[in-house]
Image 1 (cartoon, one colour):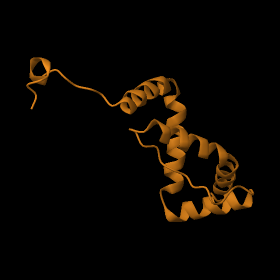
Image 2: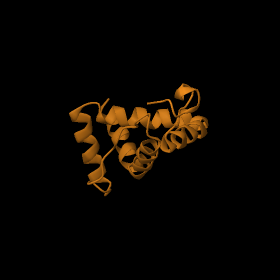
Image 3: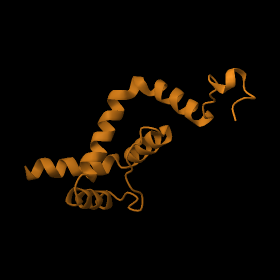
Length: 107
């Protein structure tokens, strides 16, 4: 029952605090859109096929990196997923570089 709200609640809207924080962080990250897009493209490329993911895991192992960690996609509505994707991609930087060197040698 909206009768107890001013104007019967017609203009009453409360945004979720987490949603507001998400919008603020996403807005602040606009300056990094190009970099984030490249990171996202690399993750999609590796996870885009089972063979590429297998090859990537082999490169991660060859470089002595933590094999238990995984690459996660960015979720547009969750700013922390962008942070996690970026952080984990940075941890796997040597694995990505090794993978792309291997691809260049093969082609």
